[in-house]
Image (cartoon, rainbow, N blue to C red):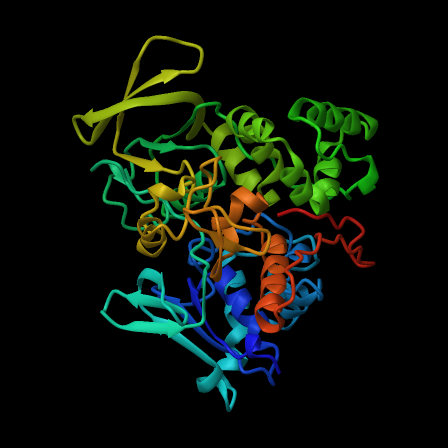
Length: 471
């Protein structure tokens, strides 16, 4: 056994990314790897995405695509089949299950390691907040809010998404259930953002009997499309214009969709195994242009609603309770019974005013890593151990997930996985991408092998001819 594998690995963050990496590291019972997982939440495996207790909040990915294990695509489906309520909730692989249930599945992966005879030696969960990560002569140090320190050989940041911080007294946290919202059920609720988080919050409001108007506002007023039982078309790697500029790639997409009779879902799903390479080889200027001009349209087609969610949101719009508008919030100040929102509709110059009981910021995650509220990530910037990538959407990492310092050198001891690495891996917010990334990094840390993130496969199951690859 090489000394490289005899390591104490500290994982900062116990959401899905952190748990998947811990699972992959612990799958080798005869290695001398020790894993410490630091998570401030009371439960591991949930993070921001899967902690919701609302059964109306569904995965936006079919069960067939949500295995946590890259070499076992049916793993989640089999787990559901043995779950107490799995068959009722998920009669076939196309189903979309509650996100809370998926959090149970992720947590179940590491439960056997905690119960094993050598579990205490090989795997430890520390429930606390990591406030700093630093390097020492012999390894790394993770400092916790309670003053304690963990010393290790390698640290991996798996901190997931940063939620937007409420910007005023009238802003409410979209990740907190509105069962006790603090505003009247007849009040007008203004939701900033019209994506999947907005849809979840609308479902939360409806679940608790909110009667007042709901106004969802975003710059373009685009809502996520719905899933359909459509199989991906066949696209070979050699026909994709890797390395071309954004305009050429867009023309290729449009031509390919036209060739499929306008069926954009089949083309977007078919391109998923190649999306990392497509992004990696896209010229930097085209990446910037995409983020500024095209990303919103890509997101609503790529990250879709479960059919049940789409139906309820459509009904709320048809009933007149939910209104989606393309506009920009200019400011908010005090009103009669809450706040007064001043906004400008897209394409107009006049300012309109709306009396609201609350403003819910569902504009999404914090993209700029320098704006993070996470003290562990901030500590890396403060010490020069990390730098923001040129696109300002993530920290800069090397191909093997090593964090690049302010001096441009990748660290041999500090790594990152999951959404923090979106600048290099782009759609690394999806479980099928994260699971491959975690398996590859675990292999590197265990065996010292060069890290190669395998392309996402698209296994075709006999029981699900409509199987598609998506987030």
